[in-house]
Image (cartoon, rainbow, N blue to C red; front, side):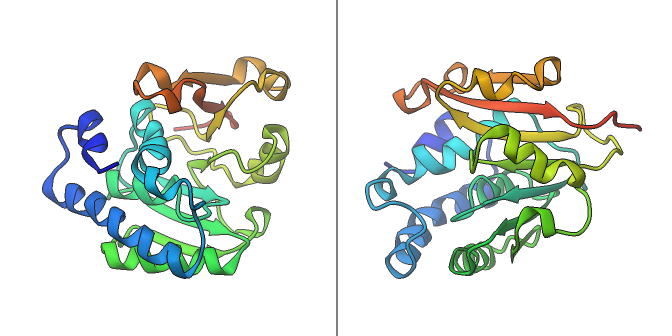
Length: 213
């Protein structure tokens, strides 16, 4: 699958963004041969299952310039790298506890010329500072994830969406969301993307702070 699936859903990309998304199709297979960050069966579905899936967050909300985002358990750089391409004026910190994954993420960010990305080997709870949003692709059960990152969310509100977590998740997770009730909004990605892969995929937005302007 080629990056045509990206321009299908994001037809107004400028040339720089198009070029960077195009480069992902060369960089990830090349790096994956050296350091496995994407499963062998998924690498051929890179654009659908990793890049477009990450951009589900971009279908739900945008970010004002200067927004700070931490991608926890970034793995090969998802959702952070595609979002950093899409939002070049947003600052991204991509963290993972596994050093070799950060090696790949850092190299790809540099080859793409993404000056708005830092990649560091950390556990989320050890990261210093606060962020407007924490993003991730279902690295653990949702309540456990919330407990890990809750203190990392800034109380200062910049964006239309309340500060908190933007979590990409699939399947049935009603029980995991029960403790958060009215603080959660769920967005079905099959409302934005027609491919079968997205039939059960969702973006969860959890408001974590009583944010102030």
